[in-house]
Image 1 (cartoon, rainbow, N blue to C red):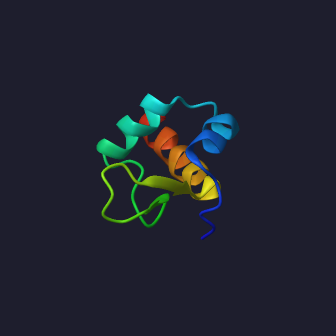
Image 2 (cartoon, rainbow, N blue to C red):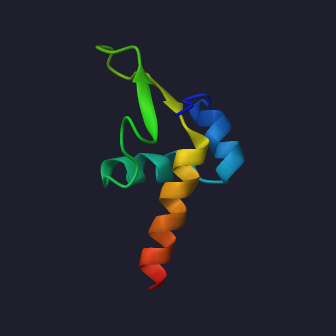
Length: 68
């Protein structure tokens, strides 16, 4: 796992909006430890580091399930 992308970088790479990423996190589609990790534990709004490959894989699998 390579948590190498900031939220802004992930938005540019995927074309998703910040609000869509937030919704997918709240719905449990994007999960901590697999798709992202929080930097700054204990802070009110920690910065998130994303694994773009994991996010892409998660969203691809989700799309296949929705279309099936």
